[in-house]
Length: 364
Image (cartoon, rainbow, N blue to C red; front, side, top):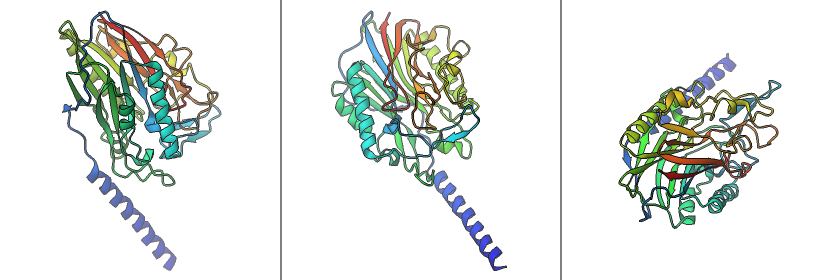
C-alpha cells in the first residue's frame, strides 16, 4: 500500500510540475504586432541606379552552432535501413564554437562582398549560443553598411532536451545594406497555434526594406525565414500566400522586388531526392510550387550550380557528406523587371547547416 501511495504522489507531482511549466510558457508567450517599424542603423546615402550590377547574399547562420560536429535535438530522420535517428543538442557545443562559426560567416561575407546581406537565425542574447551577440559582431565587421534587425524568436526558458536545455532564445533576421533605405518594417507571418507547436515555431516574420531607385521607383528587398518543423506544410502554405499577395501589390505599383531567405521548401521537385545519401526524405520536405503560388511576373531564381552545391543539410546527425540528407531550400524570388542569376556558395557547411546563396542582379 505504501508503495502505491508513494507512486501516486510521485505521479501527481510530475503532472503538477508539467502543468506549472506549461502555464509559465503560456504566460511568457506573445507575438510581435504586424507592421512594426524597424530602426535603420548607420543608413547609407547612395541610391540605386538602373542597369547597374549589384549583388545580394542570403545566409541562414544557424545561431553559430552548426559546425560539422553539431546535431540538433528537434531534427529527426530515418536512415535507408529504417533506423530512426535524432539530434540531441539544445545548445552549441561551446562559446568558442559559436565565435568560430560567427567569424566564419564574417569571413564568407568579406570574400563575396555582397551589396546586401540577408541573414537568418542570428542571435542577440540566447542560452543556446552562450549569449554571444552575433548581430553586434556582424554590424561591427561591416561598418560601411546600414543595418536593420527584426526579432523572430523570443522564448521563455525551453527546458528541452533535459540533458542540454535550449534555454532562453532571442534571435532574428539581420539585413545589411550598402545603399540607402527609406523604410524598414517587420511583417508577421501566420504560424501554428497548436498547444505545443506555437512555442517552437518561432515568431515567424520577414523584413521588408524600401530602397529608392534613381528612376523614382523602389526596390522592395525582403529577408524571409519560413516555418521549418511544419510536417504538413500548412503554415508555409499560408506564409507563401501572404508573400505572393505582397509581391502582386508591389509589382502592380511598378516597384522592383527581391525576396531572399530560407524558404524551408525544396527549390524544385528534382531537389527533393537529388542529394539524398544514406537517409530517407525527411517529413518536413515539401516543394516550393512556384507556378501555383507566385504571381506570373515573379519567379524563383535557380542557381547555376544547383546540381553541384546544396544549401541545406539535415542536422539530426553530425555532418558527413556521404550520410546527411541535403537539398536546396535557400535562394531568391525576383520580379520580372529584375535581371539576375544566382550561385550557391560552397562553404561545405563549415559554419552553419546552410550554405549561402549569392544573387547578382540589375534593375531594368
